Length: 86
Image (cartoon, rainbow, N blue to C red; front, side):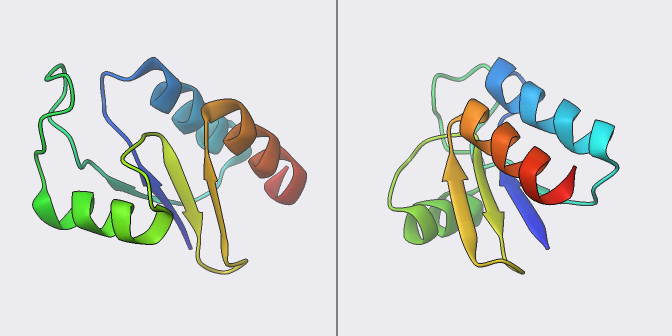
């Protein structure tokens, strides 16, 4: 399963979402931050899970539970998705 920690108003998150859609890949979205809030935590559970899993408070953050992989940075995430799901 792919899990994307993101924010709706983040252009980097949008790039990842667009790639997932183009590839026809199913995924789960977590929104740890409030859109347009400069990092204000919206969902404490999602924020804690994101920082526990990846060690950073940064979005977008992709977790591939099937492959046991994690990626930050939209360019790295897109490259990963295209390599393994394209």
